[in-house]
Image (cartoon, rainbow, N blue to C red; front, top):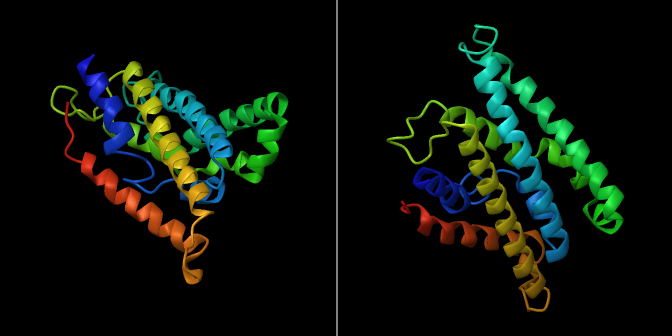
Length: 208
């Protein structure tokens, strides 16, 4: 339980996909103009992570590893299979959002299907793949079970969600401020993201 809590907190604050690894920046910068839309995309990304990372964990440990059902090291196929899983789950999310929330579907536009190529989704699966080899007794980042994979995926998704909602809230406020003309638009957004990333560095020494 202690290891799971530590893994969860680290994946949100210390190993945040946006501020620690700068993954998923395309949709992060493009959609973070409105809190409601940003929250919708963040929930969609969290759901995709919550499904794909555990499925990829099972693929890695039960199929691709040398100890898997085929008894042969098939790790070289991980990229192809991980991408296939991500694309399938993203398509499912797109259909659900279009069915139950047409307004959100229209607001997200092209960035909803682009979750399939969101670096944060693939990055989480690859980080999970690396952490399988770590010892849970010595490393708080280790993923040694399906439960750990679920916890890591949930934490990574919530971290991405917090990051995009926080930036959207700041950008909404900045719409009413007197930003110097040369910095308006992406200029002040990049500065804001940099400052937020520096603030999140305060969590780098956090340990439970």
